[in-house]
Image 1: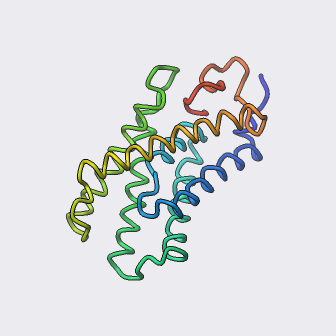
Image 2: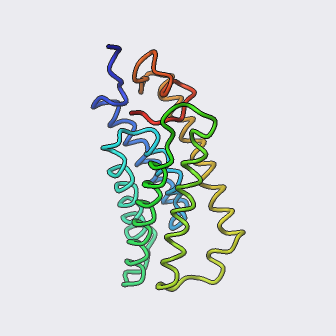
Image 3: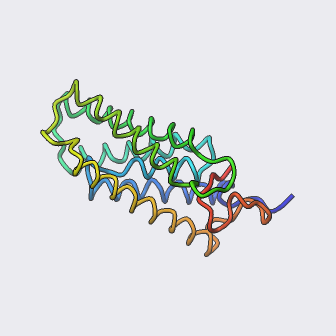
Length: 191
């Protein structure tokens, strides 16, 4: 049996989970309601243990809500609260899509397919919510959705690179030296 993965052990797992949550909180300050939950859900699905994925996404959502209401002065009304819940449901749905589409072995679509699925699921849930909740005209216009997609894609690439860097400097280690599903260049699940 090879070395225990720091990423899967207590310290490494906590470090990686904290990095995702802190990134989500920081992005919430900058992007507010457009926090790249699809990218964060994809990363959680691909790079955290299955038992941690919902916790990571839930903590990012909670941080987003605390920042929104505590620092960005979201309105304290029912519509705002329900939109916050809709964002939470959308983030959870994005996570489920990313998990469902996560590859079981290395391949050329290791990150892209789960990401596109997560993004589509996230936006679809929010679009459905817009039928019951007030939203701005053009909130789901192609130009807006395209811009949100680009933000999510850039964040995903940056966080995959951060994962690679954290592994390279020893904050996280691969599961097993012979495990080609979790080597430095892979964005496949850490199972």
